Image 1 (cartoon, chains in turn blue, cyan):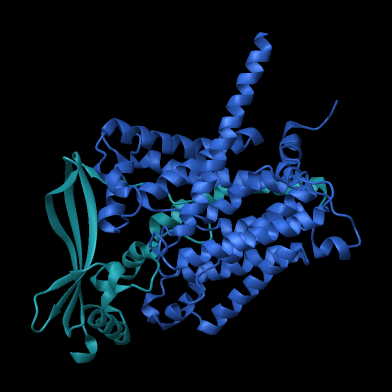
Image 2: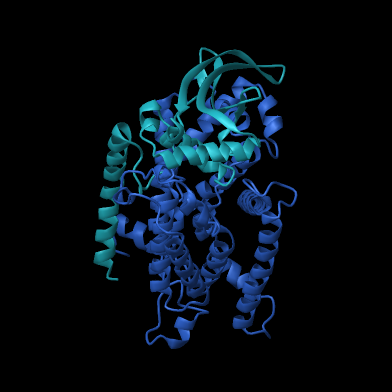
Length: 362
Length: 161
């Protein structure tokens, strides 16, 4: 019998990733960042040309500066960021590259948020820094072939990521309780929707339909569901199965927010993807044929992702079907794909539960 | 990393997260939200007042020599800025008249030039107008019940005074 405390079991045993599964997640995340999550390179020249009076840093380290730095400085940081993610992709000095990717993103976001608006995209920093310690560069990587020591897959960074997401979700839910979201006389979700639609002109997808939906009961239910989901996420980090359930809720939440308020919040999906059972994906992928070496499957997987991401990136930035601003085509596709995955998982779980009940009854 | 070190990191994080949230709350109250911080947006407002929905509109009001004053939204004025940043930018950079009065003349000139570029006319006067609209949904349409100008900020072109 294990003599570990429950605290230790929570930290070390909640997740048991494999190096192979982590490698698939690493490749996915690196490409996801390189194609979709890096800041717009052209915006640095815009920023550098704005008057200094537009420099409005938030309290914190950025307040040490007087104005936006020169364009060349931001571009250099951006290039280091790109190179870091490229190194993570191929697994070259993965730990250092992951931490560098996080820190350079932190610097860039600091300046981008010095226009008076914080976009709460800290997951772009947290994901690479925390996952650096999972040894996600331990397989299918340059490190694997050049490293002296064999690396072991670590599960505790996933527990830490879950804790941070859970806490940050709580910070989204708690002010809503104080602000009156649970008051039956206010339909806050509807109020936000109307402001997004009429003030910010976010009028894509199902927003027109949602604006016309005048049911106080439905909107109040959404208010409660939002607050409960955000606050209880922190409780859900106690168990990995609960965390995964709440990640599924998060996907549905972001999808509905995108469809109605046109806010996709793609950066969070890099973090949510960490909770996919990548080991299961790896086994399915390499189980297709025993004749093909697993390395070749992983190379194929990376190339397929590159083709898909590149196509989506082109279409999204050319304003295919939707505007090239938020939400654009690739955001719509990613969130829709995530919802389909969640529904399939849900369907499988219900089917398993039903089969279990039947066997039990027999 | 040794298990004991990891355990200590977790304990430190469990203590740090609520403490930093408390600091975020205090700093936000007196200044604005600090960064970096482990927080997601709260969207505390309910935008409801006495059974009416409140819309907080912000416009640039532009007056030319030969044309009627026109109102344009900040997202059209700052077409090169991500939409998600505009509201916060307007709040923080153009909060009140006192703040605007301290603008450098190059900033005011930049704004006049941008307004001129966007409206394709010579701009004589540039104001920022904050309007609070009280609305209600009726038969699927949003009807304005009442509205009032909350704040008008005059952007004076200092170089020409």
